[in-house]
Amino acid sequence: MTDRRRILNHLNDLLQSDRIRDYCPNGLQVQGREQVAHIVTGVTANQALIDAAIERGADTLLVHHGYFWKGEDACITGIKRERLKALLQHDINLFAYHLPLDVHPTLGNNAQLANVLELSMDGPINSADPSMPGNVGRLPQPMTGREFSQWIAERLQRPPLHIGEDNDVIETVAWCTGGAQGYLQAAIDAGVDAYITGEINEPAVHLARETGTHFYSAGHHATERYGAKALGEHLAAEFGVTVEFIDVDNPV
Ligand SMILES: [Zn+2]
Figure 1 (cartoon, protein in one colour):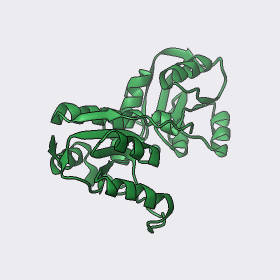
Figure 2 (tube, helix red, strand yellow; figure 1 turned 30 degrees about the horizontal axis):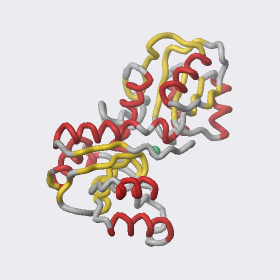
Figure 3 (cartoon, protein in one colour; figure 1 turned 180 degrees about the vertical axis):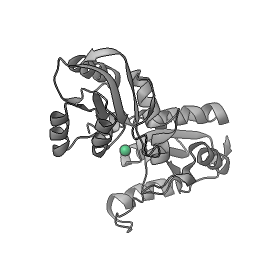
């Protein structure tokens, strides 16, 4: 068991959350009990994850996607009310780290996706703006478009949507977890063979095809499963608290 404040200070230091501009607050979003003994980690603080945390008797939730996004309705109604009510009734802390968890060099979503896919981390996706999330690197060995698709499917347990020629050889790659289809141009500018992110949109298909850049839409949830999990394992080692990762599946 440890103090909530110690966890908060540790996470803020580790993730340097006050240095990163984001469209949600990072850190303790909802205050629960002071003593932390049992943390549930997950991708998104949805109702299913809250219910699972309550069922397991957890006192703290740690997620990548929390609440209070810039531009959203500030009123506590609908599903937001239900989620907050459940957290407050059960005195559960909600810690959420969005961009700070994407970019952490070892525990972050991008670093962890590189681990899972066995990609080397050779630099930022945008060398002119290293604060932009995303990285460039190399595959463990050259693969065809189809082989790399299978490689991703096996490791993320989800087949990606692949835009590109099945028989082209891919050696270099850029990636950014989540909904980073807008960074495809940065990947093209970096001169890589392929780009991996979670989601895809209609214009990205044309941009990929017309530049000959392979696009792998590998799932927003599937690509962002690993940061919160790694961060939780780190906290378990650091503070001796019980930590369990709960994967509430999301097909997108
Ligand atoms: Zn995300």
